[in-house]
Image (cartoon, rainbow, N blue to C red; front, side):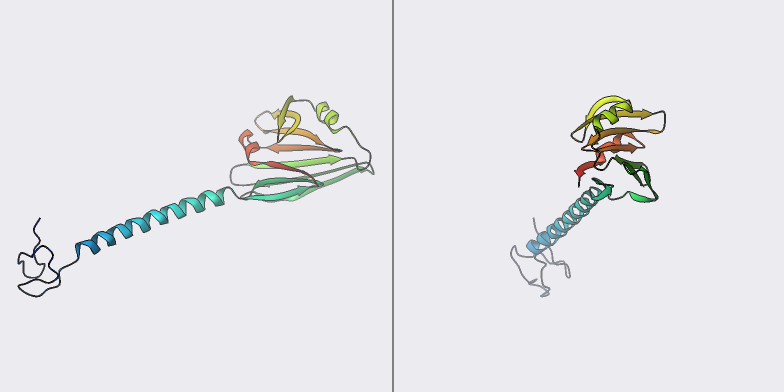
Length: 179
């Protein structure tokens, strides 16, 4: 394919650096090719960086502690201002905390009998529900009519209840365990 000088229109020799007619410098085809490809590569890397940042940030978690049990929940959940701490007597203590984001709600409650050593599995069973296993614990699944669902299970002398506004939120929670 023949090329022509951009200034005077003279036909250029195949590997000309300057136009033989007017002396105009000929644009290097190789550099134009590289410049175009470099721009495309930069755009691809920018898109990948944005995608990876969004993916990594959307999977960030925060550790939360309710009484003596630690959990991991998504970082976009904000702690609700109310926290419930109830001491029924010297032997029974209960704590509950809640978090929400734009779409869902999580509430975690822990009841324990310090030093008394209750059978937390038996207490969880007495609450009813469907026997199931979540987070590596055997417990009971409860569904509340149009108001969410819960999983109740025992860890040592603590009975834990994880309540969520939507069943799929269970997948966002990780039970780290008693501390």
